Image (cartoon, rainbow, N blue to C red; front, side, top):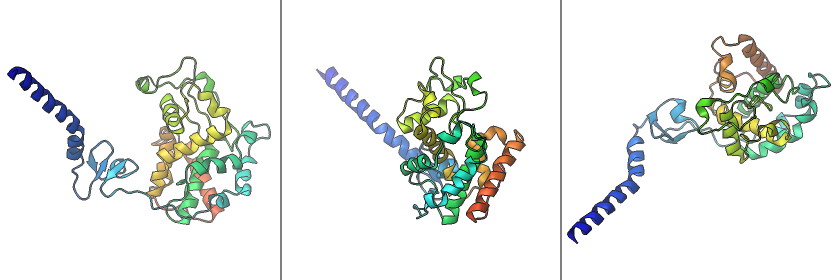
Length: 275
């Protein structure tokens, strides 16, 4: 009996320790200095990796509350159609990408283009469409040119984002969603199985624009909200082009951004234009 009681007491204490352990570990890891941020992984630091969108406590650099920017009033028919009009008349994207679908999609992303001042909103919208214009050739392409010959299956991400047989994760949509891990993450957030059905990004107008806005909000919006400049968004969208990878593509994106800021009547803002 004594042995049984001792065993039960030990087991109870052991289980209690397990139940308490996550909270204790989190508390220890998040015991940051007053000027440090605690990331979602429980580590302290002062950069955007800690104080940006994954910040859980401390002086998080969260964007200001939504402003009252009129996104439909900024993305007018004239602006949107002005981009489309520069593509060839036989481009498949001309009938696929529409302003109505874009405006419908952003209702699910209430922070898009609505952080900071109204000028900040215009700059963010200019940046988004600068990338879209470059990626799709003025809304011409729905799929990456020559993409069907590539599967873009990152083997190192297979355990979390398993590539389906005979499926290609090449660029599709306004920001040319690429690689199995991006399809997997987008699908998880949009509640769609994009790993087994990546083609839907090129066949469903709403899904296509949703993947683009999701990618922007996940990877670029916070940099803009923090004032890091257009260059940071180039690195977010296609870091391979940066650091001498493809200076021509970088210049193309920058030129579109400059033009759209001019159309919106705002400066390009602070921060580097190039990555």
